[in-house]
Length: 93
Image: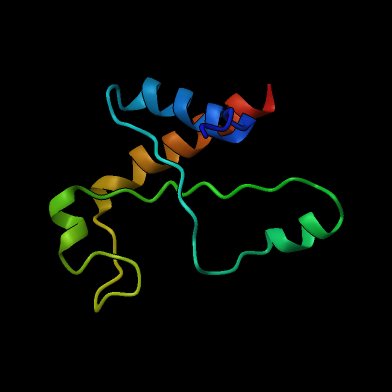
């Protein structure tokens, strides 16, 4: 069964298409915890979006979550911030 896209997912797809044409957006689920649980407890929908980026080669290397080296290359700072800003603007309208 395919579920309809949430506003968050639709916003993320729009922002991704604008910034990175042809890159697919695939919903995922984190095994960690976020502060959004406090919002959900109050009945406020909360979604997580990560502007963290890396190439396939970087993802397979040490630059991954909880790997021996969690640093991200500086080259991803501006594109990641711009991408995140676009998602926020998309959802805020």
